[in-house]
Structure formats: C-alpha cells, structure tokens
Amino acid sequence: MSERRAVLAVLGLTVLAVGCAVRPPESRIGNVSAGAPERWIASRAAGAGIDQNWITRFGDSQLVVLVDESMKNNPDLRVAAERVRRAEAVARLSGATRRVQASGNITGQLQKQRFPGFPLNLGSNTAEVYGASVDVNWELDLWGRLRATQRAAIADQEAQEGDYRAARASMAAQLAKAWFALGEANEQIGLAQAAIVVRDKTVASIRERFAGALEGGLASQLRLAETDLAGSRAALARWRAERERAVRQVELLVGRYPKGGSLSRRGLPRAPEAPPAGLASELLLRRPDILAAERRYAAAGSRFKAARLARYPSFSLTGRKGTSTDALHEVLDSRLGVWSLSGGVVQPLLSGGRLREEAKIAGHDEEIALRELQGSVLRAFGEVEQALVAEEYFGKRERAMAESARSAREAAGAAIVDFADGAVEALTLLSAQDRQVQTAFQLASLRRMRLDNRVNLHLALGGDFKLRGQ
Image (cartoon, rainbow, N blue to C red):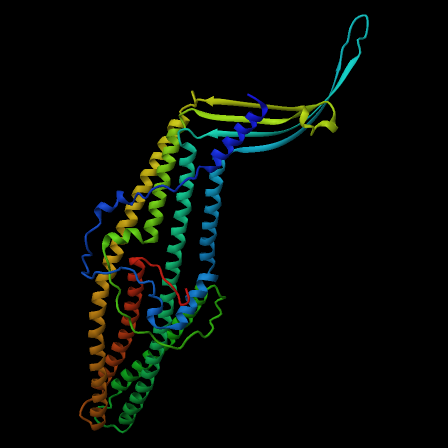
C-alpha cells in the first residue's frame, strides 16, 4: 500500500466514525401503559387534559408577573437549569469515545554510547534523533457497546429536561398557593376587623344594660361578650402574622430577599372553570415526572446492554504519519516521512468476575428504574383521581358554606334588632354573631383550599403552563 493510500484510509475511517449519529433510546412507556384505565373514575369529562393557560385563568396579573419573575430568578430553578446544561455536556462527552482520537507529537533524543575495550579504548558515539508525528486511534464499535453508553447519556439528558419542566411547574404551583394564602390572610384580616367593630359595639350595649340593671344585663353575659371581643382581636393578630409569613414566602419563591414588603391587599380570586381531565392514557405522555422516569428506565436499559457487550472483543485501528531525522531543522521535512497503520483485537479472558458482576449490577439498576417508573405512574393516577374527587366536593362544600354564611349574616342582623327591642337576651345575640363570624372565616378558608386543589389538579394533569407573551 502506498503512503497516499494509507493516509486516505485513515482519513476515511475518521469520516466514517464522525458521521455515525446516535439517536436516543426508544420510548419504553409501553412497559407500564397496560395498567392505564380507559377513563378516570372520578370524572367523565373528555377533551384535552392540559390547560397551558391555567396561571392566567385566575385573573390576577400580579400573580402572572411573579411567576415569570420566579422562572428567571429562583435559585432552585437555576440549579435545575444548570443540571440540564451539565447533562448536555455529559452526553456530548460520551460520544467522544466513538470518535477518532488524534494527537500531535514532537520528540527529540540525544544519546551517547561508550565502547570500552581492553587493552584499547574504542571511544564513544553520540546520536541525535528528532521526530514529529500525528497519531490517530479509533476503536471500532462493532457490537454497539459505545453506542449503548452514549444513548444512555442522551436519555439521562432528556430525563434532566423532564426534571426541569417538573421543577418549573412545581415552582409555579408553590407560588400560586403562597399567593392564595396571602389573599386569604387579607380577607381574614378584614373579617376579623369587622368582627371587632361589631363585638365592641355589643360589649358597650350589654355593659350599658348591666349598668342600668336592665333585664338581660347579667354580668356573665357581659363577660361572654368581652371574651368574644378578645377572641376577635386574637384572630386579627393571628391573620396578620399569617399575612407576614405568606408575603415572605412569596418573596423567597420569586428569588427576592424576604423583607416582608407590601405585595397585595387583595383577597382571593374566584375559582375559574375546572379543566377537562382528558384520557388517563394521555397522562403518560405529558407528565414531566413520568417522562423523566421513563427516560431513566431507558438509560438503565442501555447501560445494561453496554455492560453485557463489554465481554465481547474490541477492535481498534491505529495510524501514524510523521518524520524522523537526526537534524532538528529537518524535523518538518516531508521527504523524511514515516507512516504506519495497524489494527488490534482485545478479548477479555480473566477479570476476576468483574464484567459478570457489573452486568448484574446494571441489570438490577434497570429493574429499579422500572419499579420507580411504575411508582411514578401510580402516584400520578392517584393524584389526578384525588384532585378530581376533591374538586367535586369542594364545589359542593363552598356552595353550602356560602348559604350558611348568608343565613348567619341575616340571623345576626335580626338578633341585633331584636336585642335592641328587648325581644331576645344577650346570649342569643352573642350566639348569632359568633356564628356569623365563624362561618365567614370558614368560607374564606374553604375558598382558598379549593383554589389550592385546583392548582393540584392542573399539576396532576400535566403541569405545564404559558405566561402572557410566550
């Protein structure tokens, strides 16, 4: 073979090695899709099961701005994004072993050799050798072991992307819930302040009767009225503390220092229409945590394959093109060129059982990944079913509690009139007012719980979202 043909052969192998693209492993979701129900037990609603505008449907522009800020500044999300970029670099690095490795070398050697003799001294010899070469090495991936390793790294990268999507959705959900907690605290503060005003008037009215020794002005009833007033003041302090906590939680989630700044004095928004649940089988194709678990299962399968193929012989090609001379100034002279092309086969014979045990470990890792995927799927189904059931009963409870609060409000108003006319005693008035206050508090808490469950439902059904302008 001529020098030109040898060089062309090495270059041809280089092009062949670089040109072979590796695709990610095929989806293995079919291994767990057999147990998916045809429809949700808790809902018969059809249609698409994901609402990418669910953040904006709450009708609060400030919430949208805060979610957008958290996507950019939250430290945990930035860590998740960096993990994605790291996984991309690892995937690229894993492909380096399949590509031709080339290195340049320049060497120089000065050697002196003495020739002793008896009875004559034969003298010595000094030799100089200089060389420059480009060495090319390539391992032929005949069985696909290196491809399997690279495909596993690509699947790991895709799993990290799924984790990042899940983290984004979780962050938006946490922020929405913290925002609703702030809205509830604002409403409860207003209710507590209103209760203080009413109960302060009631205490004054009963004290006036007690001072005048009128009927219904017993000391015990006055003490009960003062107890209710103190309870309302305690509730006000509690909800002011809850508001401060909620404000700082929102600030932390958006990546700000938790200084307790004034964010909003608004109450809770109305719950928007519930999203359709869609088909249960569709959940396996859109939940980011399920997709991430499936990619880890696929990566584990590729690593198991690579571990089994490690027992097979490996083939490698080595090529060299360079010069060799005894004069430094001629080291780059192409007329003094040398070249070589060689191949080799390495077959593992004795490894102390290492290859066998590594394959077993990889097999166990694949089984673990499968069980983790099954667990993720089962939890996802459970979260959707629970959120759907809760959505139905939260709606019923809110309607019933709203009716109860309305009746309690009317009863308290009537009791005030009757007490002023002397038709009822103070205990009836205090009982009616307490019921009005408690039902109002409970209704506000129930509305916030329903909004939290709505967030849980969106998260369970897929969790992705878009903000205005996206």
